[in-house]
Each structure stands twice: as C-alpha cells, then as structure tokens.
Image 1: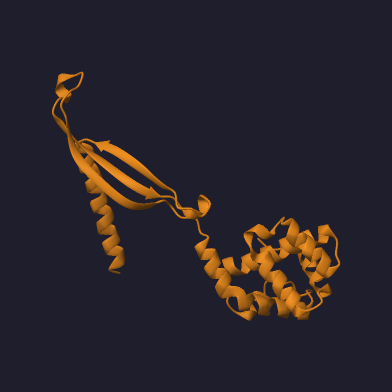
Image 2: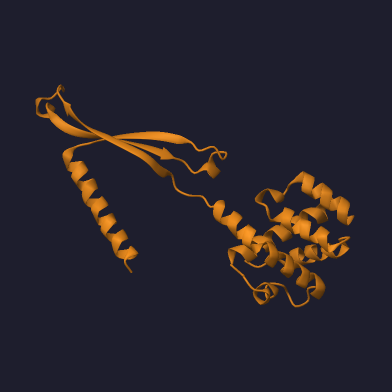
Length: 197
C-alpha cells in the first residue's frame, strides 16, 4: 500500500520543526507501535511544531507508516527510500527523512524482529506408561497407554512480556503413539533433508 496524498501533505508539516534534531526525535518517537493515538506524543508534537491536534495526529500516523513501510520492505539504500516519496515532495525534507531512516534502520529492524509473534515453545516433556487395571468393559482391562506431559511457554509479547507456562497432558494408545512417532520421523527426515541442502 502506498501513502495517501493527505499523508504526504501531513509530512510537509515537518518543515515547521525548529531543528533537524527535532525531526530526528519525532521520527524515533513515531516509529513505535504505541505512537499512533498517543495523547502525550500528540500534545508534545502540537507544542513543538505549533500545529493543531488533528495535524499532529496525521503527522504521527504518516511518520509511523513511512518508517514501518521502509523497514518492512527492507529498503536499505538512500535511492530505494527516496523512490518511496512523490516527486513533488520537498527535496530537503525528503533527504533529511531518508538520512534519519537509514540511521535508525538497524535498530528498527532489530525491534521488528523482536516483536514478531511466535508460536508457543516446547520447554519440557515427560512421559510414562500406565496400564489400566479396571474398566467398565472387559476388553479395556490391562491395556497399556502412554501419558505424555508437555510444558509449553507462550509467546511473551502476547501475555504482557511475562512468560506464561502451561502444561498439556495427552493420553495415547499404542496405535496413536505409533502414528505420532511415524509422523515425527517424517518431520525429522524432511528437516534433515532441508538442512543438508
């Protein structure tokens, strides 16, 4: 998706910034996911640039989109970033924003990688074989089953940065265990084949 015309106009408000450092700081502040709609950031932007709340909100949204777009698209050179801007965009401001983005790209990329949502992670596993000695039907007596207990850690970014551990216990018959082990064997073989390429 490209930036809408009104967003490019919102970025032109940066020409009112008292210094390049002010633009640099605003770019850093606006890159964060929590920047959009942040009352404190809107108020400080209004104050530093002498603009309305609506203009500040549009500017923050536009800067947030621009910096995230560049990181997401892995635009690593000044030429690639400059190509994102329309030709009519203020040349000096375009150059300044490009320089700032390139300067912060490594830390923003690292932040983006760290913020990726991941699947739960297997932390520990325990198992035991049980033999059922009583049942309401005769054919189920003395049948061995496997109890598999897995400790799983949820993605910390989904649960307030505190790792949440949960425990899952599964009971399997010999047939179910054989099917699972066969499937895991195929997964191991495929992983080995990919790793050896």
